[in-house]
Image (cartoon, rainbow, N blue to C red; front, top):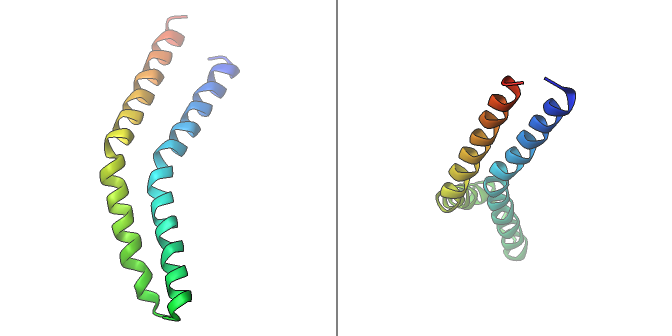
Length: 90
């Protein structure tokens, strides 16, 4: 296996990881910021108040982005195995 082949596989793996993690990390980030702004405006200082909206946002993001995440992972695996077959045939 050539160095450029390994670099390409790692590059594709990192991009796929970013695609898979982004929806599940951005939803609680936005929800947490909204909750923090709400707490600052109303001067409520309850630490448990931010947990439930983050949990609900993460679950909703997983439900909405689920087909995209599955398709992205399937495409990645298909492309990786195709490269392995191509490299193995050399």
